[in-house]
Image (tube, rainbow, N blue to C red; front, top):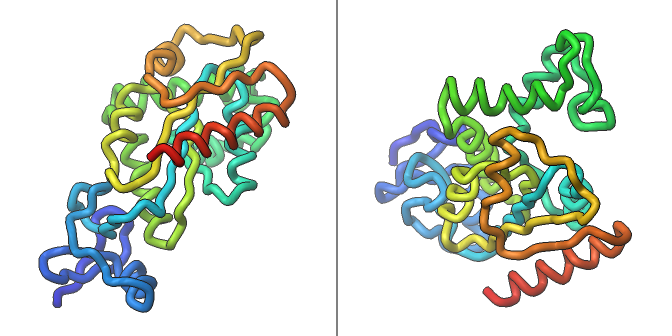
Length: 239
C-alpha cells in the first residue's frame, strides 16, 4: 500500500485499491463504518476523502450588499455551521497589509483607508478578487481555494457549512456540481429598502444566479432567523 501527499488538503494519504483517501479520514471512520472506496465527487479524483452520504450540509447565501447575509451566516454559525467564504483568502491578504478587522469585516469597510491610499477596503477586496484574481490569475482561483478548505474541514469531520458570498455564475456552477450526496441549497436574501447595488461584475452577476429559496428581510432580525429555520426545514426535508 503506497503513501502519497494529498493533492488537495496536503495530508498524508494511502493508495488502497486505486482510491487515495486521507489517513485522518480512514482513522476516524475505521471504527464507525466501512469506507466507500469510490472516486471523490468533490475533488474529482484529485486526492482525498470519498464521501458517499448525506451527512454533509452546505447552505449558500446570495444577495446585494447590506441585505443581511453576514447576519444570517453568523446565526447559522451559532447553530453549529462552519462559515466559509470565497473571499477568505483575499481578506487574509489585506490583513498582511495591516488592515484591521473593522476595515476588513466591520463598520469601516466602506471608509477611505490610509494604507490603501484613500481607497476603501471594499473597493480593494472587489478589485483584488475580480480584476486581479479572476481576470489576471485564473477565473477559478477563489473557488479552488474554498474547495481546498472545504475538503480539509470535511476530512476533520465537519458536517455543516455556510458560504455567504456567492457572486459569480462559476461559483454557483461549482456549488451545484459538487458531491451529489451532499445536502445543499442556495438562499437569496432580499430587503425592500436596500438600494446598495454596485455597478461591478461581482454584484450584477449575482443578481442573475438562480436560487432555491428567497428570504425577505423586511422585519426584525428575529423574523429573519425564523425564515431561515423554516426555509432549511422545507428545503432539506423535501430532499
